[in-house]
Length: 293
Image (tube, rainbow, N blue to C red):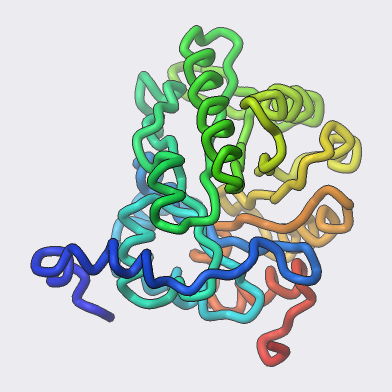
């Protein structure tokens, strides 16, 4: 692996130069679908996968897993924070890939202020300046939390600023509650539908808004709530991976569903075979097998 610390210490200018020189691609290919790998959990202090609380603690290990995933056929790009994306850029694995910047990481996992999802990472201006393809906003909506309105306002502003630059605004909404100091996202169909309607109305233009939604029950009814292109998230993987893949495959049959944004389920599969897990997702999304392109 490239000595990233040495580059950061002695040649930090290579990061800006690398973004300027990076080869880009259109947002969508011929099939109109996307498979993105998510890597923005660590910036919220969310390092756990299944029962292993510090699974993502090692940056070299995480970067190696991401590089493996990005090298597989059918993987369109990555979603991450500036620290991870700059590392991947220096490693040379972002050429010809979509890159989505994660914008608000201030709601740290387990904090008393977790629902205060402030914008602490990418701005729309920086996303545009570095040639990224869009920005992602976590938008948790808690009706008993007055601070939710500030999150909605900030998300709306980011949607507007990205739309002005004709860049994807990926909004990830949840209806959420707090029990015993712990934030829980409500993943039933009706609350997911409510979150969709609230998220869709944010910003001065919806022209470039995409949604990032969980796979929930009655997904066909849920997806009737929007005309916006939607990518489905994987969440913290639980249970049999075969059941997870089957649920993704069924969800991808819905017209509004345009692909997947998967992080831990692909980067940390139970058997440790990142390439195999990614290949299954690529075949579900694009019909791509390892030797087909």
